[in-house]
Length: 336
Ligand code: SF4
Ligand code: MG
Image (cartoon, rainbow, N blue to C red; front, side, top):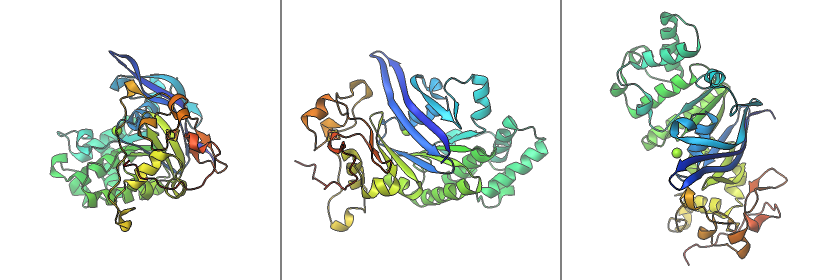
């Protein structure tokens, strides 16, 4: 199938007083046209840095892309001139973030803000921009769009503000939407509505979606494929069924076991992976997960496992798994 996005060995660093510290380490990801790829991991795993690098916004956050390629429809974005990038960012690739309030300007009505985002990339009269702005509010299922268009962000709930942000992001009919924790700041009931809305809009606008989340439950709802990141690297990648039913990496298994409800029926206590994600300035030798892994062997402490691929395309970076076997691993308690 045709790929809209191919990330190859993306390595991004931040210059600190301890020298260059990597935030992502040779990250490779593929997104097929019309599909949703969820990147899952704890905070600090490099998910947002990956997204900001794709958007070429990482320099504004103080980061430097030191290695790798990002191909959008086969065209490299990393080496692209800033001027050409302006044509892509906010137009053909758009992004939404966790906190809708910080993406909106408090002193303009939401209608004006959507109209403004339209006029950045299209030649429109202000009347036509306003008409399309109201139409966008309707398409994100905003109640009373003509009335709401004249309101300010503070007059709306968090969920409505996120709808406005989505309307802004979709106004120019992007090919790719990057959503970084789009529901994390919202109430639980609103979260489900916004996820459902994103799925419907993805179809209606014929977009592809890269969705970043710390929540395996969210990934299960929306993803076609899931990539699991740990400490700056992709440690497992596969279809939703592969990740949920046949996880191969002990970290993924830990993430799945920590979802409330999945293990709950057995009456077990909620599982937590012992230890915490290491700081990127102190990435462990060998397998970066080894200090937290109950399966760690000698080789794990010295040699980094490659991201090996099974016949079905299910990838995992783990020495237990160099056969590429796609069998479920028995769960082993971590509380020794
Ligand atoms: Fe655990 Fe070793 Fe696999 Fe790393 S390579 S996840 S330490 S078993
Ligand atoms: Mg983040």
